[in-house]
Length: 430
Image (cartoon, rainbow, N blue to C red; front, top):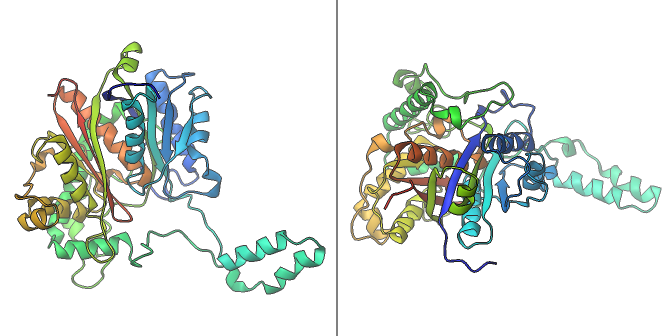
């Protein structure tokens, strides 16, 4: 490792493919197909063909066994030099944001000068496996030394062995899905159905406006004939959203619907990060700097809501950066569910929560909602689990670059009761 003082970490480019609802436009695509497309788009956009970067960190949440070396294989097909190393990471929905933190850390301390972070996920191409008892039968047969030893395990074959085991998002320690867990939190924080639907409608309207205004022209590359996220609803309304039935708590008290929750989504995204010198030598503009990042976790089994960890992570990163919640020009808060975003905002406004949970003498306060997810959030554009973090980073970096100054705050909740946050600043921001 070179002996460097901490260096500023620049985001110099971002690309993603359009996000598409599962089983639609990317139904025949693998994680590697989509991740390679995003990486190739970044390489083409920034003229990186044949260049060797310091490292590439990519990940997916739902992976086939064939994806054991997903980052390296995607990198080899991206147009970068074959000498560019790569490694896989996984932190549920915070995967690509954690990948960016890893790359940023290496750049900051001088281990590398440049790197790419990204993520991909496909619900359309989920691995379908069979029961462990069938797997053991297969292994026993394969391990037999004689014909008899290979045939004997098959005498135990039963119809139940052919019942597939499909992936799910159930938390092993609670037995609850993410939506079921969020219903509990929504009730605890008294997040109304009306407030969730209003945030959802705003997310769709802002995403559609961003596309119409050309904001995404530089960030989204066409893939498989798709040019735009296909979950954005231009024809939705509060009246239409109100007619949807709750999907996680079907009793009268349920408030989470298919409309105000993120859809199952396929997609991929990536960002290029570097030192200032590396970018300057190649004539690449610095869109923004990543100045701080933080991860946190909560005891979601018997003490806190599954998706409330970002409330803690943001509090910690603000203390580290000597900033307040109001010191930002943009807030990119991942909308896993509209209720999650609203519960997080409510927690920061609560004097009791901030005092008893965050150890603060005063509430963190409210934010200007006009600065929240200004180009649309996850309930509108979709949420391919591992791709959301760098989708958000790319959007925020572009916003700060266009503005020419300011700060942005990123907050992403994840399965397993974790949260990931980061702070970006435009060049010249003091």
